Image 1 (cartoon, helix red, strand yellow):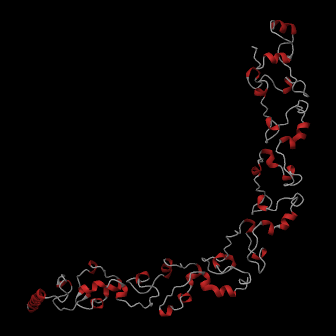
Image 2: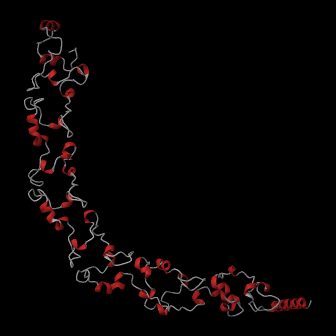
Length: 415
């Protein structure tokens, strides 16, 4: 009963005083029991009902257990509204070497930075490769004083001494670039040569070699020519016909970096694609005097006149066939031919003569002259008298194949 009376008196007294003036300022409108109890004016943080997240500064992490007086130096709580930045309460121990935006590195949970790699990833120099294992003070010399001065991000800014002291190979004498990443991978865990970044001249195919000194002498790691011939003069000289036939020294015209044996030369660029049987012919087969010793004719007969002259079935020369081989043949094979007898001369693949013959000699009895033909031996015209009587009144009729053809050019009975 005594306690209840005391509490009532306390509330009434405080209410009376508050009606006059509040120790928290005239603008403070929060009820007393949100922070105080009837036992004492002392504030117990665990008993506060006031929700600080309603302000512009939620209490998270370590801030949730900090006494109110640590931030609110007076009972006028509204004065604390100006404290919105970390530096308003916390001294900058980094001497302004990283700026005053503490939340870039720290959280309300702790001052300890839990993941340096994540922090660096948002900055100018992500930590990858061997840099993930480096101590902070290897780069930040003043880290013991909590100073993180701005550092250069080029390799040479930190590794100048490594560049100077390296002897195998001697970087200084070899005139190497101080841009380390041209040869070394930032993602690597070591400086060793198996991590050399050789993208400027890809080491693939036949160039996939493990011995750098196969191309580089001890002091010539820069300035090597990139053309094939400069390194492969011996290969060129020892290859069959290359010197004798004056092959071009631009190796990549015919070869790839995979091997020397297969050619990649695109003959279509010459205006004469190698199709059919031509694709199987060796270069010397058409270029006996070398690839660049004069222009090779693309006319068939320039290479195949011997085939033309030796053909006897039918005899091309005797029959006075055209030497334009492509009119009857293709590059796949000489036989069968694609001579179009129907449109050029007489329809034997269509009309009444379709399938009525077997061999060319059925009509062309003289294999030495295909201009000579006969109609009589295939048709029932053995009786010249009978044929003549059927052509009474036909002007200039004669019992000859040329006469038959002149009136029956399509092979039909109607002239």
